[in-house]
Length: 65
Image (cartoon, rainbow, N blue to C red; front, side, top):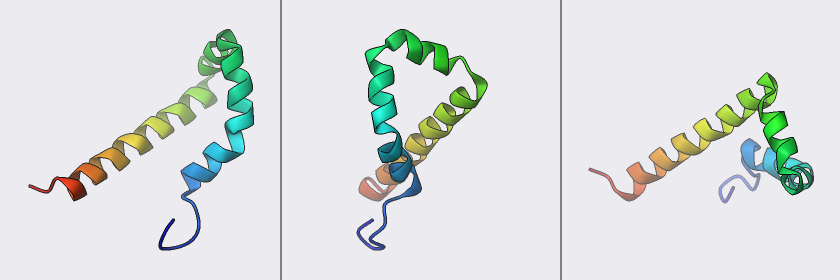
């Protein structure tokens, strides 16, 4: 974001969905119900993969071999 002035697409998606997520977290049973749906589960896997890749890249930059 510092070089382009635009947030990463994953950050924009997070900011767009934070109200919905806040509501869902108040009713945790609803979160579990939604996670059982294949499209939601697939999107969550995408997010987890994104964070794993970002962490790996950051470790490589901060702690090169």
